[in-house]
Image 1 (cartoon, rainbow, N blue to C red):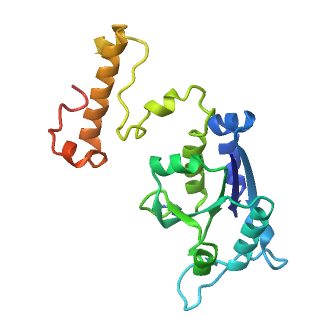
Image 2: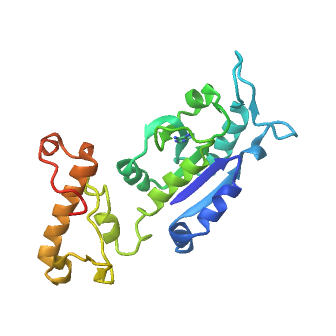
Image 3: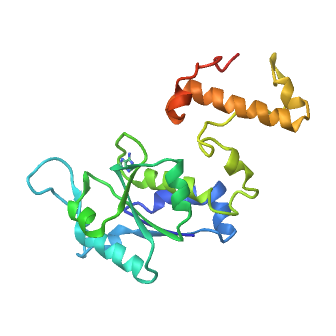
Length: 238
Ligand code: ADE
């Protein structure tokens, strides 16, 4: 899978891409990530990419020229990729959307900065606009990394077995069950006996029940209408 990222700050991606899962995914040759500096697509020698808004008001607006040129150049060699634009006005990003995007061969991510994008970037390029939550970041770079991270770990082969993806939070529509590791007793807090029993069937049942209980307590909105009416159950620390 190939990612092209268009940004004014390619350097902020470098630390993230050199670490952990994104690094492994690139080393395995499963994912290719190309960073493109938007300033290189400026139409003047000074590298201007933003300007004051018509009609007045605070901040600067990203100009059409450099953004169109960047997208058109980058897509010219290999058309067919999906253009994603990171913005607080976009569709809310979630695990379902991450799974959908993980099925694409190529994603082109446009990370803005400053007050926003010239509206003709939306109407002319028709990007899939994505928000990572109802808050305003100072730029789309962190949002682009969030989207890439959530997608890359779903690309087949990146996480090894595939089991960890299947079992984690949201994949079954529920939050994940609690995990424990050694020691069995930490300052009097004990690992539930059932996890030490070696009975895989009972462990699986316990985990399913815990995932449901945790979701009821913390994120009722994730449950279907009927399940939302069920009682909340015991609090987490019981
Ligand atoms: N750019 C600024 N805020 C954002 C958000 N919440 N999601 C995506 N891109 C953004």
